[in-house]
Amino acid sequence: MPKYIISVTAADRVGIVYSVTGALLDLGGNILELSQTVMRGYFTIILEVEFPVTHSASQLADTILDRGKRFDPQVLVTEVRNESLKPAVPSGERFILTVLGDDAPGIIHGIAGCLAAHGVNIVDLHARLDAARFSMVMEAMIPQDLTPETIRSELERCGRDNKIEAYVQHENIFLATTEPGPVRVGPAVRTQGDALASH
Amino acid sequence: MHRTEDVLATLSMIRQYKLDVRTVTMGIDLQPCAAPDLSTLCDRIRERLVHYSGRLRAVCREVEGRYGIPIVNRRIAVSPIGWVAAGQRTEGLLAIARTLDAVAAEVGVDLVGGFSALVQKGWTEAERRLIASLPEVLSTTERVCASVNVGTTAAGINMDAILALGHVLKETAERTRDHDGFGCAKLVIFANAPSDNPFMAGAFHGPGEPDCVINIGVSGPGVVKAAVEDLVTHSHTGPTLGDIAEEIKSTAFRVTRVGELIGREVAARLGVSFGIVDLSLAPTPQVGDSVGEILQAMGVVRIGAPGSTAALALLNDAVKKGGSFASSSVGGLSGAFVAVSEDAALARAVEAGDLTLAKLEAMTAVCSVGLDMIAVPGETDAETLAALIADRSPSA
Image (cartoon, rainbow over all chains, first blue to last red):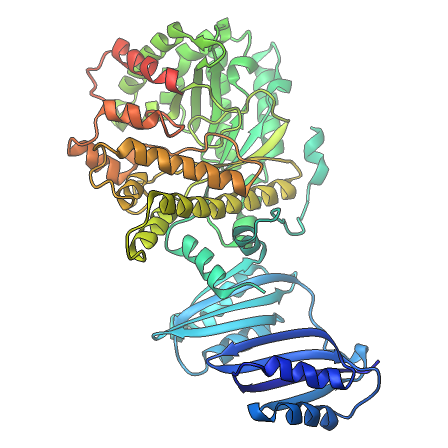
């Protein structure tokens, strides 16, 4: 069945999610994944939706716009043409990268460029400004052949003009400290393995 | 997806409030090394220690880098040498101590514990010799730590051993007088000693333990103090004691979880068992890393004043409850070290005359850890030292 990636943005008001999902339901759509946030009063939602029949991107966008015209939304629709054409995501382990520093135009661009140059894929990113202090928390996939320390020192080198501090920590430490479930340990590298147990 | 606030809160515990893994302690059973011949015994001890701990330092570095949390110390705890050295004479005991000292340096651990004897009910000839050898061992080795268990709830207290240890303390202080009597800081006298304690100087690999195990000591007085201060600052009416206890419990949860994560990862990478995590508030002389300052943040303006013991009991209880919720692998001492010479606020309270030995005895009766790092005048006689130990033993 045809699938589409749909994103909608608007000034935040009560009822936008109801409006967007209603428009999709009218066309027989089933939501496969959804992420929504409100940033500084602006609503953004991105969805992957599956439909029983093919629709044009403009037909889908118009339906959402018509139903939600009181919100004056902006809509972008992209058809997922083929699973195999989905962007290849580099493998690796999920780390949390935290960057703190002085704010300046281009700081995120510089950090993103540094990560891209090392094949680090950002999968989630939040940044904010408190006074003149910039903080950014990213979830990123770090390739197996790179150490966290390599990425950390590269980030600090890239951001030295903004006096940035960078921290690269495996996500399990944050799962351990914030969730009550069992502590999870990442794939361990056993170079001596069971030899130790039999001495 | 992780909440930014949660990530920054955990990070600030490490960056600003000195949360660290105080020690990764590898416990190693040395009983298979037993041999009547001293040379064979020492060779076997060396071989077994290197086999298990040879990669400890490198693995700790890997894990430290992976999680971005400092591992301050790597240590080894061995089976009580009183067992391993059965049949050895004094020269044999000294040779074993030198072997432990040398291997510790070779594998890159700062201390090795377990030059120990468990004599609560009585002592063997080897254990009697071991206790007699302590002044020489503690004054001539750098990394060897000793401990003697003089009592248990079931067996009672071995008063003869306590008297002997009064003399050991006196002689050890005399032999290390050029280093502030520091030899005594490498000796712990226990009652009801835990067999899985990762903290030095009292760590040993006791009965019921496997061949090799990783035990973790986490600390974090600075983190607990910051949490209490933050609670007090942001409370309009002032927090209740219940509010303070809840805040300490949730902080203890986070700290304990960090310890368990690190312990499990180190153990998995080495292919050995994970044992326990011991959350004990262990101060360092740095400002802000102090159990005394936690008590002050809780409202005890002058440490040693009435209320100090109750505040410490509340703190210890909340830490234990937070730790128990965090992990089913909590062990060791899991208390609050009231280590006078290592805690800036406590040291100031002693200097000001607010905190006396009698008050310390009361406070340490509620914090799971005993009299610790207290300088006593050099003219104090061995019998008085023994009496102080005996006074503290029944409440351990």
